[in-house]
Amino acid sequence: MRIGVLTGGGDAPGLNPAIAGVVERASRNGHEIIGLKRGWEALSIRDNDNHVVKLGPEIIREYSRLGGSKLQCSRTNPVAKDNDRTDLVKENMKKLRLDAVIAIGGEDTLGAAAVLSERGIPVVGIPKTIDRDLAGTEYTLGYDTALNVICDSAERVAHTAESHQTVFLLEVMGRHAGWLALRGGEASFADVILIPEYEFTMDQLTSVLHERLRESEHLGFEQRYKMVVVSEGAHIKGEDAVKRDSQVDEFGHYSLGGIGNYLKGLLQHEFKLTRYTALAYLQRGAPPSQKDRQIGRRFGHNAVEMIKNGDTGNMVALKRSRLTKTPLAEVRKSPSLVDVDKNYDTEWLNVKIEWTDIPGQD
Ligand code: F6P
Image 1 (cartoon, rainbow, N blue to C red):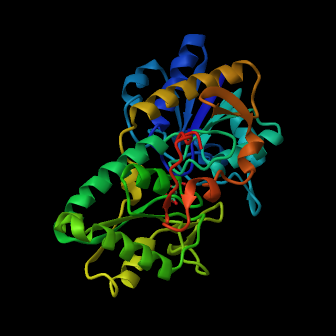
Image 2: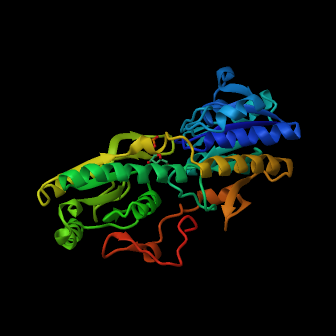
Image 3: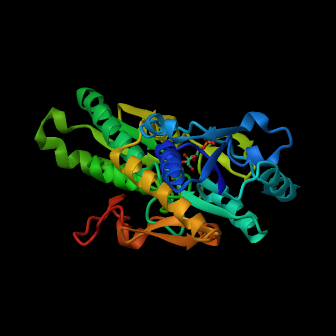
């Protein structure tokens, strides 16, 4: 068989190990792998010679340890209402003699894969997004690496916050879901965690910070800094999430970012020293963690097996720590969000810690 592989949406650590896993399994089984560059763009344009590359086992060592995507990514939507290129995708697959495509992506790339699959194109999906908000799977590639970057950065920021007794806002990614802020903030012992799923008020935020400062008054100067981990999608009650600019991608999404800076402006009247840092793309560009390499590799193997077994129209998924499959149509359902009742303390604006919780299996 000849199988195409592509990576779409925002890059995430684990994409290259997943491609390496696909190539590893395919070469063992005698299949050919064709790398399709820039996501769905490779199959959605006519002149695509520069978008196509043959991938053999010689790429495995290099791809296995690299962040980003060696196949590049794009936010191309081949099934956009005003620019539907389903027929061109079919034509290109024929031209390239592809029997099936493995699409590695999040809600948009795999949402498009679901539509193409309903229209008769054989596709298998591999889930990725550092936000970990895809329906139908407990794990998405990139989440673990991004969490590690958040923990590491929170520690660095804590040194400077401690030295200056600052209220420090650390902004992390997470467009709809607060998993990165919640679990990154939990592991960093953040004083406040703000997530998109819970609309807070400035009064509440200010009084929680005052209370936390009061608690540490008698502990010495070293303790008089406070750390707020805030998700880019978090917003004040009645307000919209803060947008980076007015651009919209092919899937209709704005880029978010700037809530940390906005809150800094509002808080600095109340707290003498308030500082802010946004981690932004530093969370995405890191080398994949052990977990993202291992799961990426296994997702890749599994995707090839699924094609061999005629399971196109499905996505590789992790459920209850087991590798399984789920229909691609699942990813078009609502994203997997933080369950506020179960996981979030709305009084203290922080993670709710129950000893029955096993983070990562939320
Ligand atoms: O969906 C993954 C993600 O990293 C989000 O957390 C973030 O909002 C978005 O991608 C940023 O995308 P872009 O690369 O278009 O700025």
